[in-house]
Length: 173
Image (cartoon, rainbow, N blue to C red; front, side):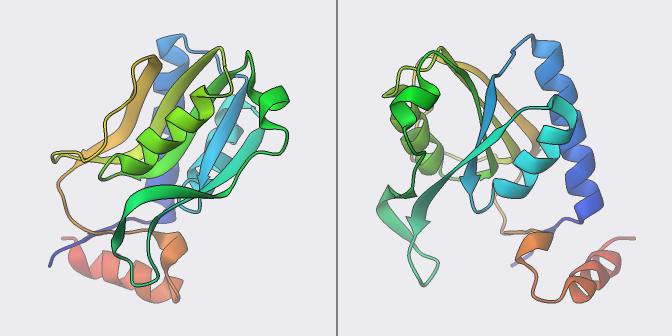
C-alpha cells in the first residue's frame, strides 16, 4: 500500500500555512491544546507562530496492535481542567483527521468544561467518510492539507530519520 511520507520541513511549512490561515480567520485563541502524541509537534510549531501556551491531553483510539477500538478514551487530561478551560478560547491541534472519532471525543470533553470557544486545526485531513462528527459549536476547523486515505508516515514516528528522509527522496521525482 502506498503511503504518504512527510519531512520535518514539509510539516513546518504546513503548520506555518495553518498559522497564517488561523490569524486570517480572526479566531484568537488563549491556548493550544495538543492531542498526544501526534499533535505535540504540530502544536509546538504553531506556538512559534501564534505565541500561545500549550496544554496536552492524551486520547487513545488505537490498541497495542494499532487497530482502532470501539471508542476513544482519555489516558491523560488537563489538571484542574474546570478552572483552566472555563471561559477560554481553545485551539485543539492534532496531526491527522482520519476517522474523526478522536477529535469528536476530545472536543466534547473540552466543551464539558465550558470554554468560550473551540477551534480545531489538523495537519492533514483524510478525504473519506468519517466515523465521528465534529460537534456543533466548533468555531473553526482547518486542515493544513487535504489528502487521500492512505497511511501517513510522520518523521517523529521514524526509528531511523535518515532512512525516512532517504525514502522521501526515493519516492519523489
